[in-house]
Image 1 (tube, rainbow, N blue to C red):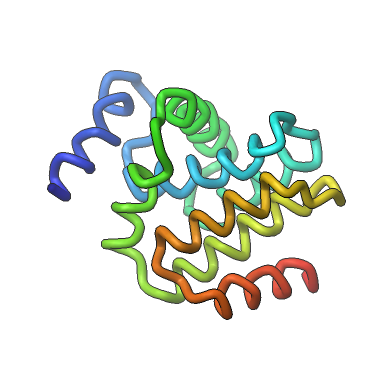
Image 2 (cartoon, one colour):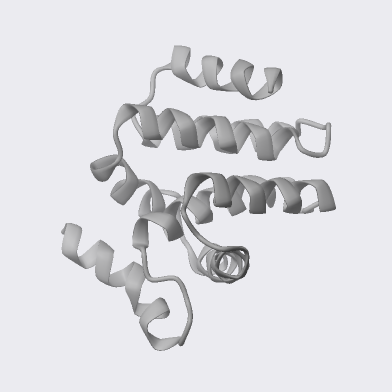
Length: 147
């Protein structure tokens, strides 16, 4: 099953020269895009935080990060659920990596200084799919607000 998920993430990337091929980076970026688009509007602040969050989470260059965001937006548009993004991360990431991702999701949601209820709801769903406890969900929220 894991091989089919990895193949799914790589199918788009392999065909496009210069695109991102790491399925973990794509899955994490797709979740970040989901949060940024949860309120059906991506403010400039959210886009900046999205890009800096992806650069913080990965080792990608500025151009590769921009390419990853474009690919992630395409994948999010085609997605039928969050599960396809969270499954690979859940099977691969440590608890620390999952918590770090959750903090970044909160930072993206708060980037425009307005926490929309859809943004909070989607972060809650992502946390649940990553098998994070409610206390970890709240700690990530507080950590994001403090920084």
